[in-house]
Image (cartoon, rainbow, N blue to C red; front, side):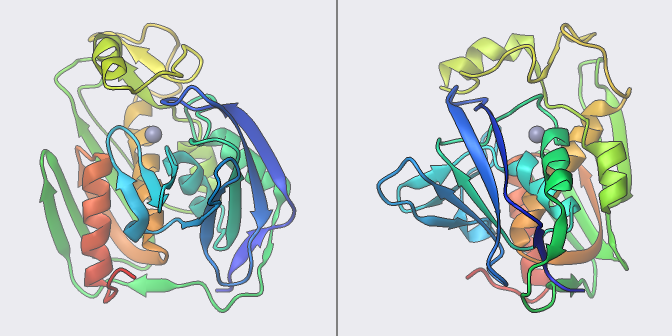
Length: 280
Ligand SMILES: [Zn+2]
């Protein structure tokens, strides 16, 4: 399995969900074997920020990466699309602090990557790692388990007291076609009742009705759902984006109950250790 990158440069523009900053993202063919690397063009340092677990800075309502003082927020939707598109080497340049939220789903990133095309990057073979025996992790309310498997299978369960979500699940074997069809259109979501509190913590400054499903306890307030279990499908995509920070393609069946970004990252670290990798 050879390493791949995009066939040509492509760009997306939009506003950051938490920063409210207009940002242009440029996806460039990556140098062979270098992995996924973010770079801020609006900072003095312009440091390379590898999309790796060792660079995770924040997991509060989004995943953020940092090297030195250069930080990039809300990387998970773009990274899930990159992983599912089969891309291993990619340079991601931004002129702002946060990947744009767009419609709150993974689909705009999948579409941009599909239009850019995929080609061999010339790097040595894709890093695939097999899991030898099951591993488990409990992180707050989140529970995770990974079992040996011949591909990557994700199985996500949500349990909410609010009946608009309730108990629901989503699962599937990760490949480009399945992700594009079954997961990519699923949007992020939040409860209207939480908005004021999150804004008080400096989050959601860029939130609009066009970039998320806004929920009352018993119904969506601003849109109709794309699937009854759109919430579980979205959380599955978030999990994939966070797991992509492993820097290899795990061969495992992964069950996640009540996942969170914090739990996803903690579990990815457990999985890296179980696969014989320590963080660089
Ligand atoms: Zn998300």
